[in-house]
Length: 529
Image (cartoon, rainbow, N blue to C red; front, side):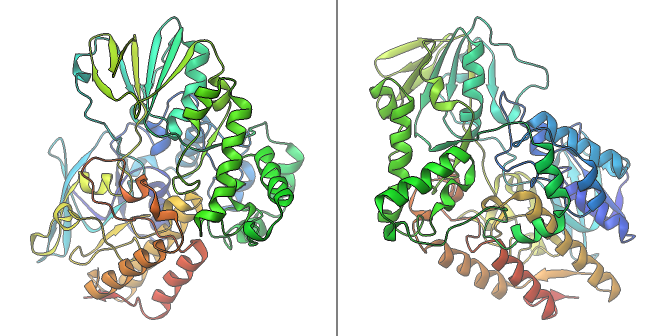
């Protein structure tokens, strides 16, 4: 690959593609390094059965170019992985992005040269790229969590991880399949696998709440009405805490009558999707308020699942909304099928994997194929996977040994000219990721333009600004009950990972306001040289 550029971007997902396009428009030379053989980021890698976005497709798209918004047609309320990947490829073609993307190039190290104020990135194949500005656009959910299961290497059949699914179709017809995990990717894939497999056994550690998607083909009249006012539609969405266009009731569930509560949650259950939790504004502020929607969903599970014992196992015991709410198509009804079993590995701990079976306490389940659906090393996994060495040899892996810290989720002290897109300390996974990505990319691009206009060679977050912002992030996370449950938001799904609340819980509008204030005050909290 060419060994020098102005801006080096790691990752050709929606963030990396848009940043490349934006910088080109500014006349800034940029190069993208991508581990995969195509664009799309998480939608390039996650090809498991049933993979689908949990944000409505009409909102899960770029808004920087109205012509792009108008010309692209989504087919369903919630787009599938193939359709989202097709959209990413369309964007790459439309703006001729591939000529500045180096595919099949996984970055393993990045080192900052203080004397030259430059970064040198080194790929696994030994190739290097030197750049003044270095941007990690590697996503929040891009490093699969691969649990250390005893005997897994001894299994004689195929093993699939939902985060690294083969690009060619997988046929489970006539096979006995085990799915380990019941997070979002499992909840989406289990109904599809169950319809194909001879027998499916689901191994569940923690039951998760899931709301029906109520997916359907998009009504052309509805799409036309949105496109007629897309700019206003987006502006209205940007004023909500998650950046999603929906109706959020600020009232208290505790002030509502039992009939009002039931009607509000029933209406949202029938409508489907993540807006279920918007029925009342205090559901995440107290355990008493949270118990209302949690119990509503448990009742629904018991209404759907015919076997009371199985329904009990599928009912989450923790609070609802502390973990990311799942959205499904026929998840709970799948457990009424004769060819589906559920094993609670808290009751029957998983002992080992043998050549042809999963062994739990008191039972050996013979299987032909394994599906590992254990999620991701979220927020920090991709950043720590690269050996990033900043000023004075400071290593990000060591700096974050006890948990991450950053300024606005954009930059860190001692790592000059390094930006992160939707890094720890930004709203990221609590929002619609596409507008959040666009906001971050535009902020970074404008900052680079500001530097270039003033002949600044270097920018760096100050330690005081980073410490102040990170303390604010933790203070906000302590309000209410969001942080009281083990989740990947705090790294609880990864053995040995420090428990630190990583996303910013203050909401999309407040975060954007803070970013704008930083700029208005001459990039307060940043030092230029």
